[in-house]
Amino acid sequence: MKLSEGVEAAIHAALTLAGLEREATMPASALAGQFGQSPSYLLKHLNALTVAGILQSLPGPAGGYRLARLPEAISLLDIVLAVEGPRPAFRCAEIRQRGPAALPVSVFAKPCVINAAMLRAEKAYRAALAHETLDGLMDAHTVQTDPRAVAAGCAFVLQNQRAQKKSKTV
Amino acid sequence: MKLSEGVEAAIHAALTLAGLEREATMPASALAGQFGQSPSYLLKHLNALTVAGILQSLPGPAGGYRLARLPEAISLLDIVLAVEGPRPAFRCAEIRQRGPAALPVSVFAKPCVINAAMLRAEKAYRAALAHETLDGLMDAHTVQTDPRAVAAGCAFVLQNQRAQKKSKTV
Image 1: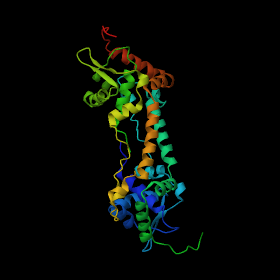
Image 2: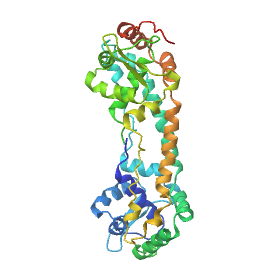
Image 3: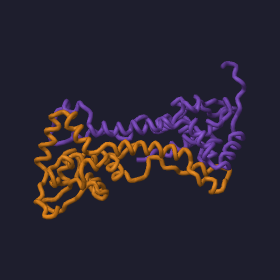
Image 4: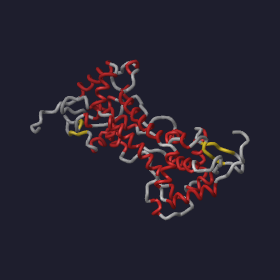
């Protein structure tokens, strides 16, 4: 079982955007360059995050991406589901119905106990992912990551973010 | 993210074998037929379970498969790892090291906070899977599954299991 590589790219991009100044954006080209990726590859995942309401996309020469809501309101579960889709890892194909006994469909109205058990475990996984927010990751990054990497990341943000004109509406 | 179809097949096979009489076996052909599968398809997963010490394989015309240990000592985690392998779902490719800053490798000695967070969630998933044993699933099956399906399963076991001669050693 394997999460797609897009999950890693999406989380890193979202965490970078969590470090931007208020209302600033960063273009996809810069986000992609930060992790040695092609912009077209990353755009697919940035768009998935935008559709999911995690990011906003501002058009134009001063545009780019930014978080659509506060870092504490964005979890790793939000990002994983946006990239991977909503279906659980275990997808019951109801093989219990394929036996030789040819029982009527009504026999299988109650869920398969195996599917129920796998979904309980999935629920625990999702709850744990929901517990990890961008806010928490930013704190961990500041405290645990090598200061040279933290400094390089800050310099990258300062160099590549695009400040937005003060908006007239709140 | 998707668990392979082999996981469903393996769990169903193991749960069937948990219902056999003491020391009895069931051939792969019967196990496969119970779920409308080809024996060659199921054999791959039965062998993975055998290598993992979950099942035993007895050779010969009276042979077949049976559990290698008690149902309460076999969890869904054991089966998932036997079929899917040991690696976690999130496989950090260290994209944080691919940036333009060209930092020395020593900067990245400490684990990436994103990888650490994803592994925490994986640990919760595995703990939940470890909590689900074949013993618990048998109980749930007896109580929750339609009695007609339970009866058909019992009849199938009685018809297809192979009793073993009483062993001379304990």
